[in-house]
Amino acid sequence: MKSNQRKPQYSNWVSKWILRSGCIVTVLLTAGGVVAFEFAGHTNWLCLALIGMAVLFCVFTIYMLAARGALSYEGEGIQSKVLDGVLSYLDVLHWNGEGKLLDIGCGSGAMSIKAAKKFPKAEITGVDYWGTGWDYSKKLCEDNAKAEGVTRIEFQQGDAAKLDFANDTFDVAVSNFVFHEVRSQPDKLALVREALRVVRPGGYFVFEDVFYARSHYGDIQVFVKALEPYVSEIHFVDMRHPDYTPAFLNTPLILGQMGLIYGRK
Image (tube, rainbow, N blue to C red; front, side, top):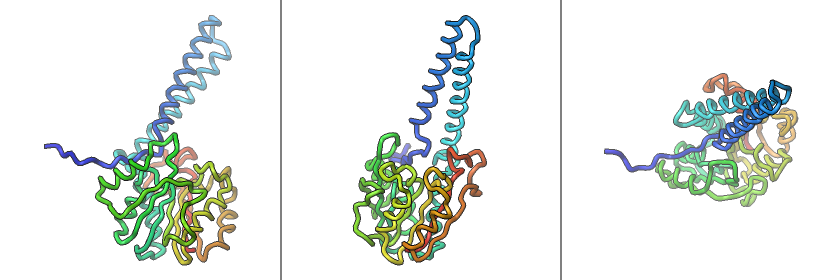
């Protein structure tokens, strides 16, 4: 007899939109190359250029498809392991698991729900913009929490650049692969400071992102140094080659620029 209980549906960091776009562009470029060949009656530079780009997009799409499978909860479960790694730094900080925890950019609710299970005495809040281009929504988060049997959790829509919470509201703030996606605040130092604003003095924070991406963060050591006046303790960890990820994911396209900032306000 089959169970009617719904399974949680955690979205993948490699969205279906990326795969669909890669396939469509590959087909269009290939078609363009064929047309260029037919029109000229022989191989020409335009035909070769279009076919060459089609091959590149095809390789890109295949790579992203393989990455999606490795990241998936149904595949190798790398996403789950990354989130476990983020929350493990709260153990390093010796948080007692009591109080209020904010998950900034909660997506499909995976880390918020993990936090609720790991810290059963904590009150968990997940906030996300849930913009277009991602397979995320507030309803999906709530459905996933219900499927996991988690009740001490609240999800709400919001902008990480301007969190709708008073100063010092939370005992802990966590975030994973979010800050670089926030279009409403290009100044990433200001964005991290906004996340710290809602953490109480003496509270804890763990933020993981593509901190080695200079286009977003510049020199990461300089970036971390600039945060020191706003916290009592801060550390940076290079997460580009964790033991739990296959080597092919350690590229700038997926996990190859990972870093983690943690500490105490």
